[in-house]
Every structure is written in structure tokens, then in C-alpha cells.
Image 1 (tube, rainbow, N blue to C red):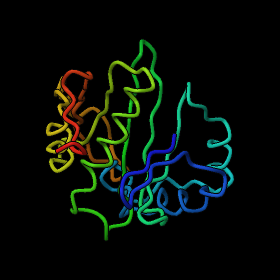
Image 2 (tube, rainbow, N blue to C red; image 1 turned 120 degrees about the horizontal axis):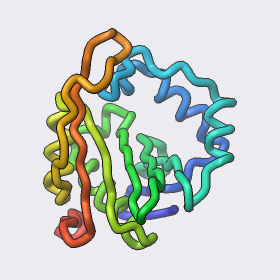
Image 3 (cartoon, rainbow, N blue to C red; image 1 turned 90 degrees about the vertical axis):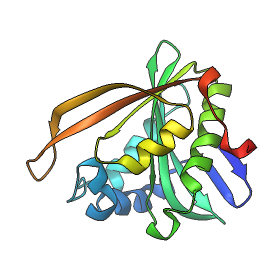
Image 4 (cartoon, one colour; image 1 turned 90 degrees about the horizontal axis):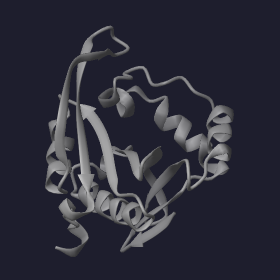
Length: 176
């Protein structure tokens, strides 16, 4: 995948991105919202192996760039039945809270529907109300709240929210 919009680019992660992804994924500040305040403890070699195994048909890790500088990552995983599960992190804090999330997700979702997916699903922490607001602006529907469904690295129970989006409900913020 390669999507370009103004100064933004979403592209497939390459082996050379394994060092940057490892830095982000091991940074507790970046990963805290996902339940990993100590990071995930991976290595560039493990990340590189993961990237090598990816394909458009199964799953992809994607790099978000602003003016050719990596600022975050996205991913999708084909879960079958024309459905994919997605994730997004703007990892460079200087680029958070600037309205980029809804633009990046709009570009990403549009491309996934163009690839033939009929439904897009995701989950987020119930405490991540900022993300929930963006998902709902894009047309995602809340389908389930999973009370105390997992334990974070601090041993605290967490609640997640499941969302889904079909193309007819999609609100594309790049066209507003």
C-alpha cells in the first residue's frame, strides 16, 4: 500500500523500518494507551522477521510519514469474510492532537475498501475517549463493550470497546 495526501504518506513497512518500529513499540509512553506502559520488549530482528512474512492478503504493518519523516504506524489484518482489523498509532507526540488521525484513518479506510474489504473492525481501550470520538466521526459503530476483559502490564483490569464500519457508513474526512 502507498497512499499520498499532501505532506502525508502511508506506505508498507520495509525491513529498514524495523529499528524505528522497535523504538516505538518498546517506548512505554507510546504504548501505554494499548496497555503496555513498559513497551513490548521486542528487537529489530523480530520486527524484521514479522515484516518479511507480511503480504497484502494476510496482514501489513504500515508507516505513516509526514514530509518523508516517520511519525507513526498503522496495521491491518485480514480476519476473513471480507473483514479486516486495523490499528493506528501516531507515535511522534508532536503530531498528535493536530487532526491528522481522522485524515490518516480516512485515507487508510478508503484504501482498504478499494482493496475489497467490506467491513473494518477495531478495538480500543474504554479510557481512550479521544480515539473513540474519531472512530465515531468516521462512521464506526460501537458493537460491544468488553468489561474487565484483559489485564495490562501493571496488573490492572482493562475494558475494551469493539467497533465496526461498513462502507455505506464511512465518512471520508479527506473530502470535507
